[in-house]
Amino acid sequence: MPRNALKPLSAALCVLALPLTACSGTSAASDENVVTVYSADGLKGENGDGWYDRVFRDFEKETGIKVEYVEGGSGEMVQRAAREKRNPQADVLVTLPPFIQQADTKGLLQKYAPEGADRVAGADKAANGTWTAVVNNYFGFVHHTKELKQAPATWEELLGSGYRNKIQYSTPGVAGDGTAVLVKAMHDFGGEKPAMEYLGRLQKNNVGPSASTGKLAPKVDKGELLVANGDVQMNYAQSKTMPNLGIWFPAREGGRPTTFALPYAAGLVTEAPHTENGRKLLDYLLSRKAQAQVSAIGGGFAARQDVKATDADAIALTKIMDDVEVFEPDWEDIEKNLTSYVDAWKTATGS
Image: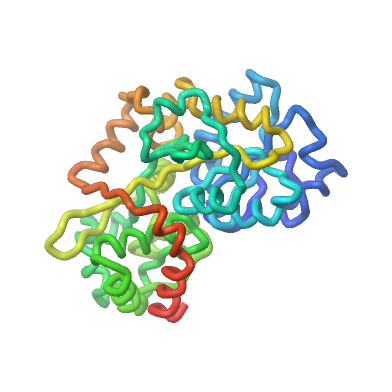
């Protein structure tokens, strides 16, 4: 499930390299019973068994509105929407932070508070009403459980020679989870400079940048990699068919493991071709029915605070988060300075 490589996931979509207007000779905008979603990957199953699969299917059945789905990395989805700003093709945009904030800054999102948004925590929605979380999630790493029965406890352990060419993380500035590596490192190491110094040292063990976060977990499951980045929702869902994945959170030596919320946040695209359909889909994504399915089907955490899942998956997800310190990033600073942080990372790692 690539976080930045565009991929068509609906039979109604043609080759994504072509404009949407090339599909069957018509554009999505010409069909009044359609809603087009541009989304970061992770919520759609490999075998049609993900949260999006269930929710979209139920939405189509209940409303008669067909969901056209386009998937890619958070950064790439925002870039595509920005290129189409004068002639929008998407109705709903779903990305991870800080890219949802970036989309807002670029004027790509219009104000709309879906039904149920009042049940979402203030930190998980825009103060100006342009986006709200639909699935809560947390940044994390995965390790190969056969060779590493116990996950590495610290960042510093990853510098050991036993990890040479056995570590890989997705590209900061392109993939949401790749950008999250920088966010967590800057928090854990106490600033940009020490974080970049560490990542520069880690580079000797790093296979190299990856345009896809989703493709890393299968490599870890097979033992090609010992450690990779990811996020709890995606990796937990993948672990159902990849038994050698273990989710963990590195700590500074002598410190506690840390993470931060990395929700799938959704907004209505400015001048969307099907604004009303987009509103209906956003309402549905935050409905109690859809939110109650987030853990059991999607492997994530409900965005609505009044939906308390008690299924086995919800219990397992809660256990994963035990004793992990959750901090809140300054997303405004990260969105504003993302380019400079990524440039610093490139300099430090020679990428």
